[in-house]
Amino acid sequence: MYDFRTDLADERAQICKETYKKKDLDGIETENKKISDKLEITRVKILNEEGSRKIDKRIGTYTTINIKDIEIIDKDEIEEAFRLLAQELKSLIKDKDGPVLVVGLGNEDTTADSVGPKVIKNLEITRHILKYKPELLKEGTKEISAIAPRCIRNNRY
Image (cartoon, rainbow, N blue to C red; front, side, top):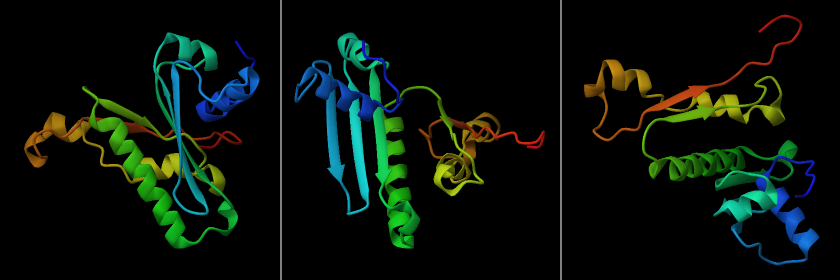
């Protein structure tokens, strides 16, 4: 197994491809799609234990949305990035049975790290509604819970 310095599945898969000098890795599928000049999405599907061992990630689908030149991105491109993120989350959730927990990691006070908490603020959280007032939701609504951990600085939240 390779000693990775990154936690991103797409970067790990790329490192393995370069290390083993292979275009494709057994047990791992990658898909890269350019949305615009500034938006790109990469999906890495780890299909089996062999793929899991190669990049030291559990079996599953890992999605990375890359925004280039974020410091000069315009409002329409930001909206497109949020739409893309929402679409990806929906596709990951739709085929899952049981409840879903979304963890919005990041620091809301830092622009480049604020996506996680902002996503949580814009999710429709349904767990409590399904428990106490299910008649308010459409039949088949997924149970969604969310948490956005806060960064603690100077003993303040």
